[in-house]
Image (tube, rainbow, N blue to C red; front, side, top):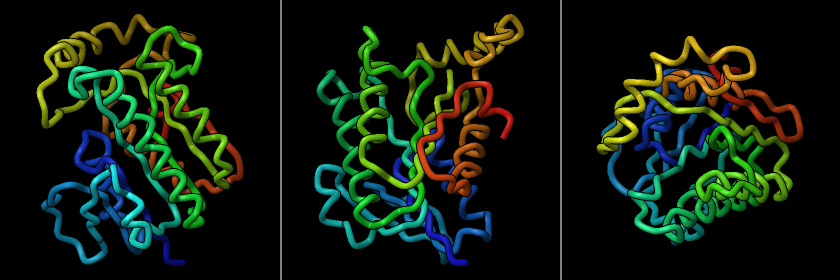
Length: 217
């Protein structure tokens, strides 16, 4: 059966790996990637949609897919303000989700964050939680929410504090046992593998996959 995947965030750390993994897997007959610039990938099954996220509706017809993967995300520093951060991590994500629902996507996979909570006093985690809450309210047939802890991997842009955390976090992993296992850092490759795995899971409803569970896919 032909299956189409749609990826938003394919130039990011997890999304970039996921995009290449999807193209390596013959189970996916077509892969659509939303990007502002050329991805530099050559594959007959890849369809690049050059889109401005502020006008995503203009590309609605090109965004029909069976499974939608949303790996979009930024940082407060990179965004420049709380409003700009919210636009990327909430407004754009929900805009894509609404289009996915209207285009009758079967599965929506969101890479969120461990600790996401709409009532959190932490702005980052509160926005992530609000996004999850609003996504669930849209009524998509199947939603998978991935909540990784610190994601390890080489990013295209420099994030000095995160780079330091990536060097130190593995040293502390052995101390994170029992309920604290969810806080162990995880490789971007593992998150991408988990995303692709749950993308094939069409059980109805909302399914949340946290921290340590993602490393077992």
